[in-house]
Image (cartoon, rainbow, N blue to C red; front, side, top):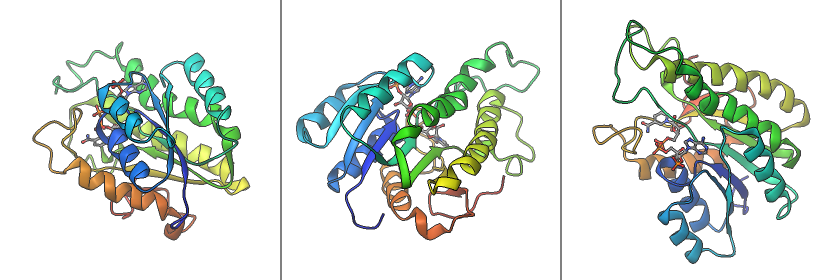
Length: 237
Ligand SMILES: NC(=O)c1ccc[n+]([C@@H]2O[C@H](COP(=O)([O-])OP(=O)(O)OC[C@H]3O[C@@H](n4cnc5c(N)ncnc54)[C@H](OP(=O)(O)O)[C@@H]3O)[C@@H](O)[C@H]2O)c1
């Protein structure tokens, strides 16, 4: 993708990493479809700054109806996407750092519906906009890496949803690779967003910049690499 101008769609662009990536793309002259459940003031302000290059489209990744509608609305304005960025996510375990004995497994499907099925819903609905040379990305987490969690006990629903996302995205990759659509799962690092909290080790602005750079040069990673951190280093499954 290099220095060419890109057309990108970003889920969960209302705040946190999604908003930062949206801002980065716009500052570089790229076009962004911000796919959001709630627009929020930060994105409204950005729209005033970049009225030509930013389009805000309602999209709740937890609802097939909403995602299909968002894809149709996007297709009214572009015939393709260079990048589809699945960033929206929830950690409903936050603040309930409990092990399996206290976890409510009836609640687990809510997390799974956004973090796992939500991504797959989006890639399915937007697939017709991905052409040869397009890229499809998903923001995963090292929390979903089985080998990186040798002794963790808590936030079970979140970790399981990201591990399941990794497998679902691998299977999806195997299909779209045949038509030369690139794919990558990204661990964005522990960032000081609403989700990561104030004690997190990474500045989200810095990681957002690094991640946008990584997405734009993803071709350099080679076709076999699928799960990387924000520096482009492979993360073990
Ligand atoms: N922060 C970290 O330390 C960290 C670490 C590893 C991985 N990640 C991953 O990085 C991604 C971004 O996280 P973040 O830290 O930026 O989180 P965040 O600050 O909590 O923001 C989450 C974003 O996802 C959106 N979202 C949630 N549910 C949605 C739904 N059903 N439909 C559409 N949008 C929805 C939110 O929209 P609303 O404003 O409408 O709620 C918000 O824009 C997530 O996938 C997360 O799992 C984060």
